Image (cartoon, rainbow, N blue to C red):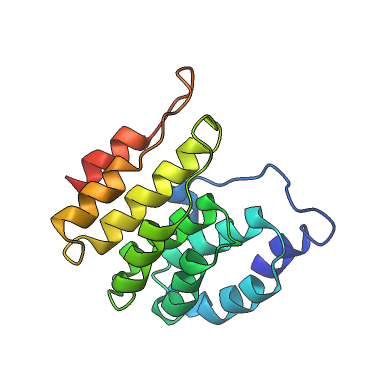
Length: 168
């Protein structure tokens, strides 16, 4: 089923498709990790990559932790994918990558100050990285990340406050 889903992206980068987290949780399991690993290696679609990371997250696929951490440190990967990878690392519970994830979040270049469309994904990346690194991040690291939260469009339904609440 996963290979068929990934095959839909052979000629498209975006299909506008997404799945409820509860549906992904019912579908996935840890034994799918090798298939997810293979498909992540082949993916050229950010949308497919994000979906596969969610599969890894809710399947708690610990063998993929290093790969997920590599997405966070890759400057060519978008903020949404980085945030999904941080959320997956947090859910999986593999804490070995916290130092690298924290460093990547602190040195990542934020979107332009007036790019309110990119702000939600940036904010999600910063806060999901902080949540994953909680206990490793110093108070100054936490303040630095919180100070980097960007202004979002006023007519945009944001989840930034929810992510802040999850951390607290």
